[in-house]
Length: 214
Image (cartoon, rainbow, N blue to C red; front, side):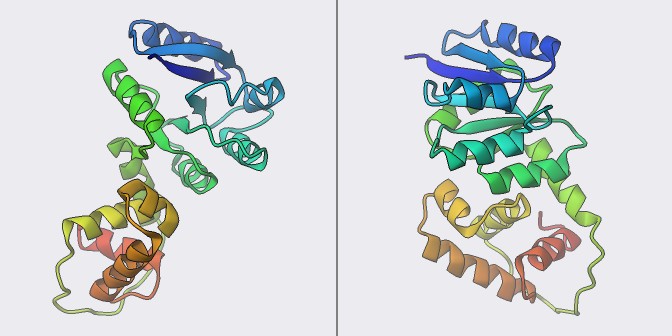
């Protein structure tokens, strides 16, 4: 069965380009398209699709505000956000608002379709280039750390958790993404902070960046 997708993008050429690109793949069908989030909300069609593909920056109602409006209406259709290289602050905001995935607009058709499919199936995905931009944004914060000699090595799972923390995910969102209980993730986050010798999540990410862990 085809994945039914709604496309929300204010730039007509970009919208038509994405629509044409998706038309080359038989597994995705664009069932609706809108110029901004307000049009989507007014249409009441957000429930009539499997995935919403939406730009972060739009007039009238931004991608983040649209996510919040959908949540207020009790609509849980997964949203995949589009971004550009200079959008790391907006990406963090969209993550907190509940977006399930993030892609750059120059993504390949194969990656776009694969991500849409995985988002439909309940996964949470962030394109590596987007994650790197978010991390670069965090590096701009000026935080000094106390000396902490010979920290205990982090496991692969703990590094993955750190990357999700850096991307703005809550413990519950990390738990959903990793198919773990919230309690388990909370304990693992505490373990990560203890290993890094820090008191909060932001400092944990910055310390990991300082050490080249993420």
